[in-house]
Length: 113
Length: 115
Image 1 (cartoon, rainbow over the protein chains, first blue to last red):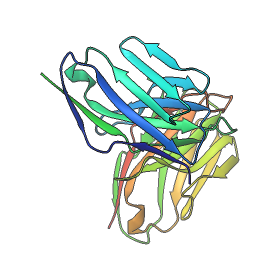
Image 2 (image 1 turned 135 degrees about the horizontal axis):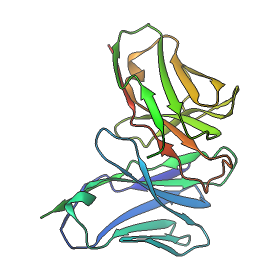
Image 3 (image 1 turned 180 degrees about the horizontal axis):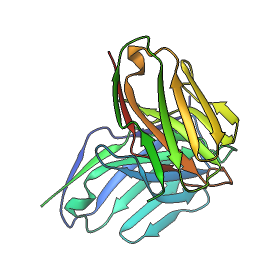
Image 4 (image 1 turned 90 degrees about the vertical axis):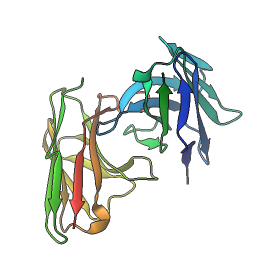
C-alpha cells in the first residue's frame, strides 16, 4: 500500500540552526506533496505545497524539495526559533478527484535556546 | 484561520451508544472530510463529501456514517461506538476544485473516549 514515511524520533536543534526534516514515499508516485504543522491539541495547519515537476519551493524561512528519483522530500526551516517547535506532517496527493491525501505520522521538532 | 468549528471538543461515552460529531464551516467550501488520528498512524480518512448529499467512503469507513444536508455542516455518526473508535477526530475542508493541489484546512479536533 502507498506510504508516506517520516522519522518518528524527535529532532532537537539549537535556536538559529537549520532544521531539516525528511519524508520518503513508497509504493506511490504523488503528484503533489504538502507540509503541515501541528501543535498539541490543534489541527494541522497548511504550510507549503510542491508539485512533482518542481524541484524546490520557498516561503520565508521555509524550503521544501521534491526528488522523484530518491522518492523523497526535505523540509528545511532556516534560522529556527523556539516558536517553530511543533510536529510537522508530510502529506502526499496523487492529484485525483476528491483531493484525497496520504499522511505521514509526522516528525516532532524541538528548538532549544 | 479558516472558519471551521467542531463540536463537541471532548466526549466520553460508553460502548454501544450512538455518537454524532459535528463539523460546521463558514467558508462555503465544497469538499469536507472526516479523519481520525491515532498514535503511530498518520491521519486516516473516514469519509468525505463533495457536495450536499454527496459523500464517499475513505480508508477506514467501517462503523461510521456521514450526512451532509447543508453546505456548511458535515456530521459523523458512530452508530454503536466501540473502544477501537477511541481517537481524535478531525474535520477538514478544501475549495471547490478538489484536486491534490488544494490545501486542506482543519478544525481543532474532537477527542472521543469510548469506555
